[in-house]
Image 1 (cartoon, rainbow, N blue to C red):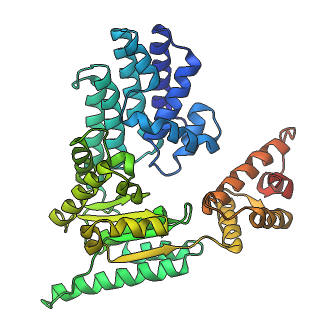
Image 2 (cartoon, one colour):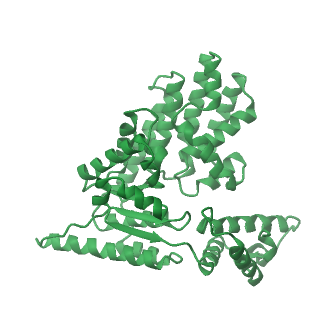
Image 3 (tube, rainbow, N blue to C red):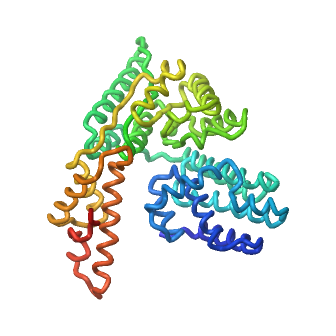
Length: 423
């Protein structure tokens, strides 16, 4: 798959940068980090990003961290141009950055409204910093993308049934207790709907959820299924998962956070708003402003909005306790445990099968050794760790067969122990 529009946007940005006296390599580095930050909420965006910028997908996280501040302030190179009073070149460069932000949504063939909104806000930040009119072509294109996606989302009719979604949940590796709780929540909400149809009293059941667990334990995947389940139950009109985090809700100026948070909430009406690392909103006044706006919206749009907050267990407990409005609205907490050795092996096998690879017994034996040797500290990636090992094995497999003119079908499919990295 190619990503022609984002590639063209990056090339145009490089041209603008060179005209302004910037080094092409510096512009490319800035574009890569900026694009990564914009598309950080898109599932598997790291692979499309890797293809576009010819960089290892393992560097995506670092690029996101580097580029995140630029969602709310001018990029370093734009600041450099503005500092030298190069107004026209700076504006051309800002327009280039805006185009990169908008086209970064191409990493998802069907981007969520939250992803489009993040791109729009990122583009606006750069354009405003350079004094470019908000009626520019870049902003018009971003607005059009938002409208087009909203229309597309509203027109989708072939949606999975309740039974199909629950089957998808059950097919996930591990997560026994998580599945049980989601089944229980689904049954409870379904029965409440049936009672309401018969004119019976319906007990208050909170639809909002708290997901706690370490990174890579399936929280986002299950949240996406919950969004579909709620739609299948008739509780939501769209059933999409709108993903965000602190950077998508908090602005750098007093009063702006409420506006930014309200925009994300507006895009999530009829869907599930998933806030990752939500505990970071309890760190300062800006975060508190976002929480207050969120709590009010949960009351004002109680029939249109479902919120799932996620993060580490201890931090999330403190976060929920930090605001009485949160405590009263989040009645269900679901714990996502770390994956066991057998579960990580099962995830690796599932990834391999989905890509027509077959790990040998020796490969699985070495995989188990790598899993046992990996420290289970705060940096452990769980499912992402298994995915990274699979990607590494695929890369080594290709290198091992590089001199084979016509490898056999078996050779093309089998992953050997040597294809896995050393400890």
